[in-house]
Image: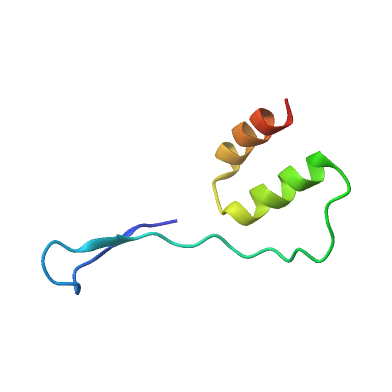
Length: 59
């Protein structure tokens, strides 16, 4: 995931941050752990970061 510098706004410029993937919410997750997995899947973060978040969210 890269952050690109946008300079066409005139003075200074701005940072464009990529958006997270959209995950279909057709049915609510059966468990809290499933909800955590759904959230982390859509967050678009590195596997190592997702592992840390998973530990934090489920303890």
